[in-house]
Length: 289
Image (cartoon, rainbow, N blue to C red):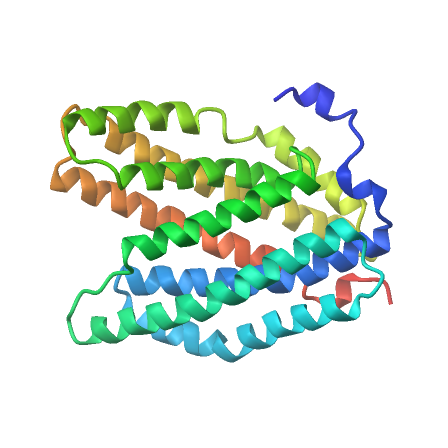
């Protein structure tokens, strides 16, 4: 990606008023917060942190349902919403409601069995269906935004990483393992943006939002840092996978344990960064009175 040329392009959101773009971001933050709260709960249940998972979801269960329903109501009431913003909000809110309903049911079950000492995992077919739905949303987002949008930059990496998960499910012998290694090296190459690209895109985004002048600098600092932390977690996913790919033969149990430990740490950082990013826009004090 040519960063110098990117700086001269007119950003997709600048065709919208600051008021409309701010409203879009505020509604989207409710959707994103709800999604990532459930995603973190799913992760805690899957890695069998049973007590932590219980405490986490019970602290947020009622609020996340209120938040996603509030977002849907906001979309319905926004009668004059620009068509592209409406398309994105309707698609993401609908998908997120389905994700919440299904994932809470699955993870509640997993956590229940965890308490009994029985390992239960989400069926791989259901996981792959979830990945397909999320990749569809990423493609839809790409159609209506631009390639240097912050979410688009993240989705560029996430889409490629999802492809590796899908490909991993096809491994059955040494030849398919070698093919998987080649696929990963090619697929993930160049999917993470440079720091200056993240900072530039974040600054442009903040500049087109109606944020109170007295808090704007401090808000921008938090916003940029959280996006940097998010991409650091993405890089950690990649590093964990590269370590696994260093195995000449099939990975050993030790290799897999190291890989899973790296993923666990990266996932926790990613979930927390995304939740905090969404929370930034829930504080009404940042907006002009």
